[in-house]
Amino acid sequence: MGGFGSGDWADACLRKASVEICNEISIKLLRDNGFLDSNKTGTVEWKNVAGDVVGSVEVESFISVAVAKTSFLVVRHGVLATRVEQKIELIKWPCNYGGFRYYFACPAVADGVYCGNRVTKLFLPPAGKVFGCRECYDLTYQSCQESHKYDKVFGHIDNADIESLSVNQALRLGGL
Image (cartoon, rainbow, N blue to C red; front, side, top):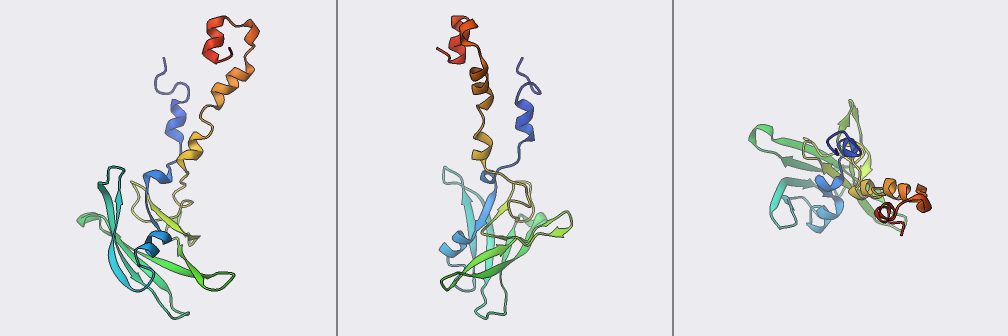
């Protein structure tokens, strides 16, 4: 009773991966570390809740001051045999009241088609080889998966005929 394949166990296997399990690079992270101010080379590290480094990437930024020139990042990650170098275009997008904001052009290729979505965060799932946007990796948020976790339980309580239940059954359903 309650084994694999019964009840909601199968649903847990079919859930989408969440952004919380992925490594991410954001425009905010790059701006806070000075990568968007000028050409810079450095390392971005990801840490777990205990403060241990769980991953890192080398980032090299090439920021263009000319309007016609493209700014981009080169991101290197992986170990010797599986070392990946990825070029990520940075888009300067004008703001309504002057100035501009940077965005990534998603560099991922899904089903043979270049994505190019304008995004502020790129993700690298545990099994992924390149950074991509949330749509390319079909990622969701953990809070979305947990938001209706108890709907079935509360549905049974709402549908139960409390008068016809024994005291023990009603207490188990929370009806008394």
